[in-house]
Length: 86
Image (tube, rainbow, N blue to C red; front, side, top):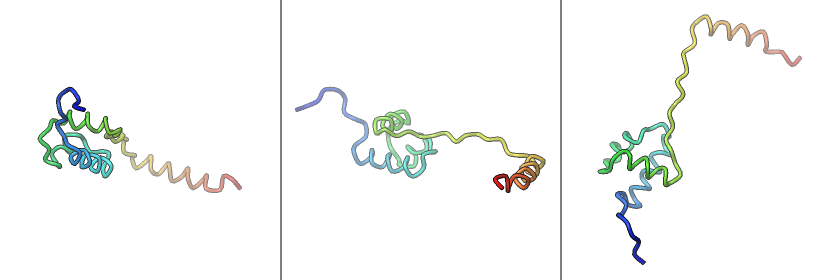
C-alpha cells in the first residue's frame, strides 16, 4: 500500500550511518555529522532523523578550571579526610 506524503530525504543506509556516528561520539553536532558523512541534507534534517531514531546529541558541560589555590585546598581536605571512617 502506498503511503501519502513526501518521501524521506535520507535512506536506510544513511540513517544507519547517522546512528553509528552519534553512538560513536554523542557530543558531535548535527552539522559536523552532516559534513563528515557528506550528506546532501540540511543539519536540521539530521537532527530530525536522529530524533526519529530516538537519539540525540549532547552538549558538554562547561566547568570552570580550578585555580592552583583551589587544587591545594582539595589536596589538604582529601588528606585530612582520607581516614574519616576509622
